[in-house]
Image 1 (cartoon, rainbow, N blue to C red):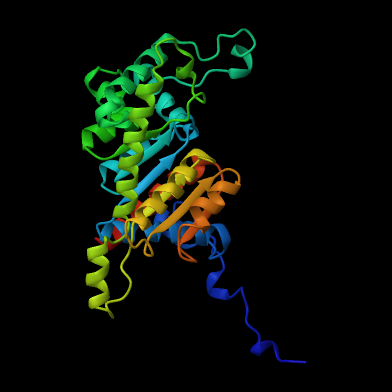
Image 2: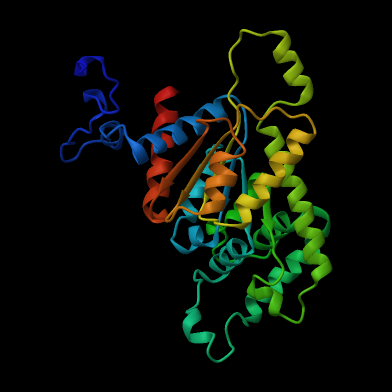
Length: 320
């Protein structure tokens, strides 16, 4: 038999949660969270984002349509305006919901009802501008074309649009389309060639952002020559609510960047979703990054994203 004092322990007093008094500040409430599992993952993701921006590295926010549908767009726009989120990326669904919310202040139909009579996804007011953005996006990319359309077209609620904000702030915004997955592809004006060319341009922009999360071959060589300075903070890839498209796109971009000689060992990733899915677990949290550089937090977007944003804002304010 051995003494318990000689045993390693996973639970210790300093990591226990502490009850917060009524009316306590967010910073104190956040500090009192337990130091385990989801709370520890959340803190690590927050610290990674803050370190990346202090080092001048990108923070790329990838999202699915549910982020818009759960009312989180203003929170993301705020982080963009603060210079914390430096690029955004989504699938076709995210772009469609963003456009509808910007133009009408409403989005998301009852699919179970409209799929029965064949009216699902047939609104010209959505299909026409999205397909027009695809045609305009042949040169600048679908994301920037959509942002320009919403900014210059006088969308009534363009202040709620992630893509309009990206165009206004001149930061990368990309849309990664899978043909046949979006309602706008059902429209007679859908142009497969335009969609393909615009979304391919966005993929190349996305790859540039991912490469910038690490060190270029020349930077890596200079860093090796001055060894001893310690590891440099890399950029951060955040995936909120995309179970398939964005994790797959990210994995390919990482491969391209490393193939071109970029050192991504300092890069960090975090996945936030309501369920744990295979592709985000493998293609975001595990495969692309060094051990310990990927985090996962499970929960509802409408709770986690406000919490994540406030924790970042408090941490940035504390360090200023």
